[in-house]
Amino acid sequence: MKKTPIITPKAPGAIGPYSQGISAGEFVFVSGQIPAGLDGALVKGGVSEQTEQSLNNVTGVLLAAGLTINDVVKTTVFMTDLGQFAAMNEVYAKHFHAPFPARATVQVSALPKGALIEIEAIAVRP
Image 1 (spheres, helix red, strand yellow):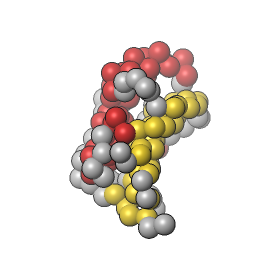
Image 2 (cartoon, helix red, strand yellow):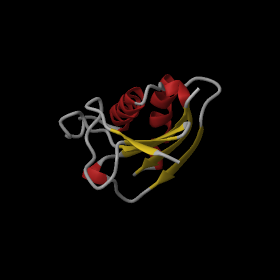
Image 3 (cartoon, helix red, strand yellow):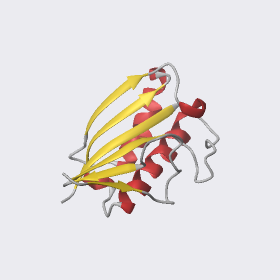
Image 4 (cartoon, one colour):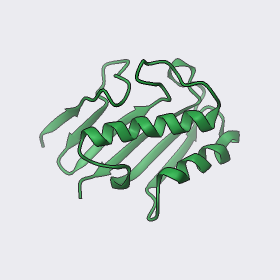
């Protein structure tokens, strides 16, 4: 199966040896997106603002692959504090519509650059 990297200025560049996304057949795998702006700096604010930016970054990678957030079938949300789950979920629900993607949400001890949240996604080409 041919794998094609997705590289876009519509999301922060990779901060390590990985691709922003990979297209593999009908699937697009979006690497975990922290709430960094295009300059690489974390957005100011709490988990709500950081969730918004992380999802905007996911959307940027998807757009570069010719897809939209509506093509996402699975997400994984990494949070440093599951006590902020309701705030994350409120923002998340504004981006996704029924049928909602499958999702796992896990608490981790730390994320790159001190982020509160990171979101990865898997999308399928229509």
